[in-house]
Length: 291
Ligand code: ZEM
Image 1: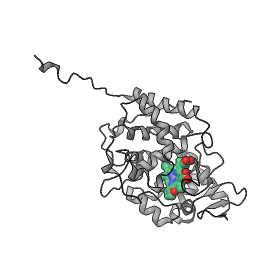
Image 2 (image 1 turned 45 degrees about the horizontal axis):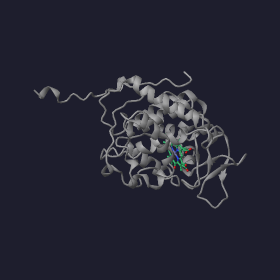
Image 3 (image 1 turned 30 degrees about the horizontal axis):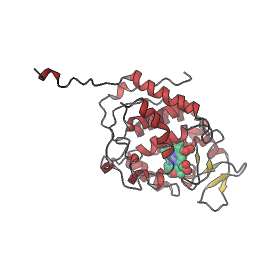
Image 4 (image 1 turned 90 degrees about the vertical axis):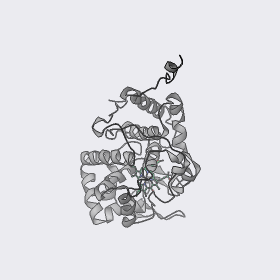
């Protein structure tokens, strides 16, 4: 009688505690690998999660974080994704330690962990993304081009379903990290504390004077006072454009409003196009290493 022996393979159903263990492992690696860049892989992990998600097109319901298709050459080689191999490689030992998690869930969990460990707001998380093959790679050109103006920003983020307020809130991620000449061609950090989440990006836009940087690279801005900070042409739009500016000024004054709107917009961004089974009211909120 062999019938009873089929389907005996145990299926592991991960729960909150299991995802918290993955979070803790990423947080531990972040702390250990302080030799990278300004002392943290946090910013580049967040950029990976954002570029995985920001390909979403609401009209065709294609792209987004489901699939982790940046693993494959067509998408991994898109100019916008230059340098993100560092983030993907950083997460490889985590995938090996927790083989049950999909790359697509792992990359987003790493983005959540990066934000929280860099003292940003809590980012509630849902699991349920599946890895898909290279036929799901998105065409080049879905991510924003830093050399462009406000109509481009609205076209790109509008395609994902965001309004002006969310676009400005999301831009506040540039409190973190820096530009690398060998990745985007641009150079330098936006703030003096690129591994701590703050509203300094908005404060600097409002309070400092900015001028064109004189150099051989692409058009970018530098602060007049120290010439050590930078803004992309797209960053300057959120202080130039009237509708964007009201939110930039709000977030410069009110860090709590920024954290609240940023968290809400990032949760939306990270979930675009994912067919979740886990309900919205049962998202996981991870404990940070310093909680
Ligand atoms: Zn970024 N971003 N980004 N961004 N970004 C860079 C770096 C980082 C734009 C952009 O062109 C660039 C969002 C929106 C937009 C981060 C997060 C988020 C760099 C530098 C460029 C050129 C890359 C390099 O050279 O390494 C444009 C045009 C955007 C919208 C208009 C949103 C939204 C983000 C998250 C929510 C982060 C964390 C970095 C820093 C990466 C690092 O390695 O330090």
